[in-house]
Image (tube, rainbow, N blue to C red; front, top):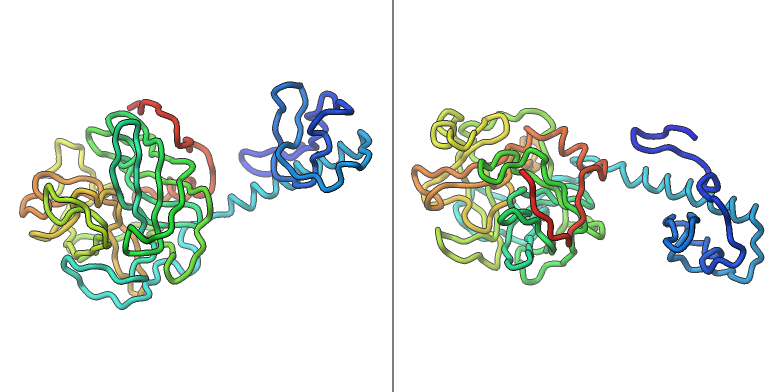
Length: 349
């Protein structure tokens, strides 16, 4: 065989076949080349779940081996093409509605077409978070959205393509990747990726947001935070996406306020505007800057806060996206570390 990626070896499929039974019930289903599976009732590696257009064709062992070998090659190449996913795809960060400095206003359609609303279902609970589309298959959100009381989320429904969370398109997430350094108590490394079952179809209503690939100066900049969270402490979430402008604080202020939680200005930033800002239900959503090129860039992920939302001494803490460039790059280009949804497993610190 030959090494073709850091995780893959290319070889002939017939090398994996110990014996072929002439009348195996699935032996003739070779014409859809999309998966290879070990049949549980035998020792054979066979293609499964395919339509057969020529089931009456006589198949010799030689022909069978050739078809399986070709199938493995096609599957391998398909897997490689699926991994050619990069951050900041063409057209990222483009708003199709003029954006001004905002203070607690409703978002217009196509203004932030990367925004998604997450419905999170657990064994005995449900809650909501925000997130952003960053590739055709990936949503960026906060790790704490996917873990509740030490239990992984069981189901995530992603609503996208509309500022009205009741009217958007929906797709389920199939897998999740939580940063291995995430700590539920100290809220460090609060970052995660969701992979959806079906690719997003990009349009004016559905567009990925850009991410910084190098360190971005943030102090004293005005940034936009957006979400479907409550408008005040103890309130309920809203149906229509809203936005507000916050000011990013110097790191010394954030460090003093949150030192007991191991606050780090390398991986976090904090921001606030009195009476405004992120609140319950906004977790996982973006902190955004409008760049000089006219595109939006996500510099933070809503992580946590203390006390009342928008309180004068209660800035919200955001996970800095530029602190996780390598992690994000690996996360969208490889399936390593992802966990399937639907399994009620305890999260281990």
